Length: 139
Image 1: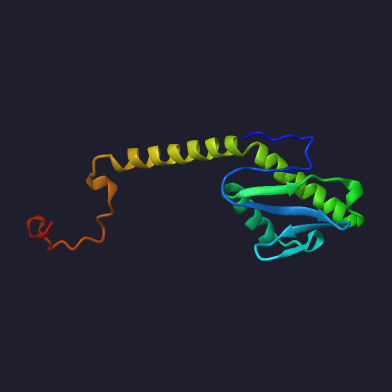
Image 2 (image 1 turned 45 degrees about the horizontal axis):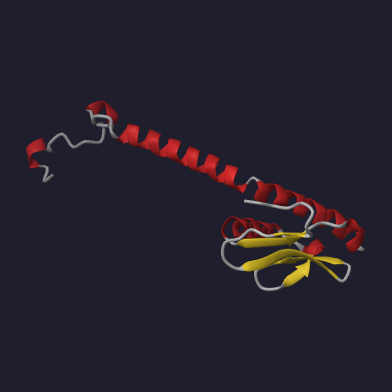
C-alpha cells in the first residue's frame, strides 16, 4: 500500500472509488452509505460503517487542512477522524496479519482440544440413566 502524504487525498485501490471524508464549501462531510452529511452530525454507527468500508472498499478521504474548514468544531472532529483513518489505512496490512495470526492460533488451540481422547473424565455422568446399556446405543 503506497500513500503519499503530500497529496490532498488518500486512495486505496480495490473496487469502487468512494470518498468517505471530504471538505467542500468550507465544511467537513462524511459519507453515511447513502448521502454526505456534515461531520459534526456523525454517529457511532456511521464510524463503524466507515471502518468496515475501509477494510473492504476503495477508501478515499480528503486530507485535513485546517484553513479549508471554517467551523472550529468541524475542524476538530474532521482532524481526529482523518488521523485515525489515516493511521488505520497506513497499518491495514499489519492489522490483517495480526488478526489472521490470532485466528490461526485460536483454531490451533481448538483442534488440539478436539483431538484429545474422549474419556469418561471429560463428561458429566451424573445424569446418565443407569438402565441404559452401552450395547443398546445406536451409534
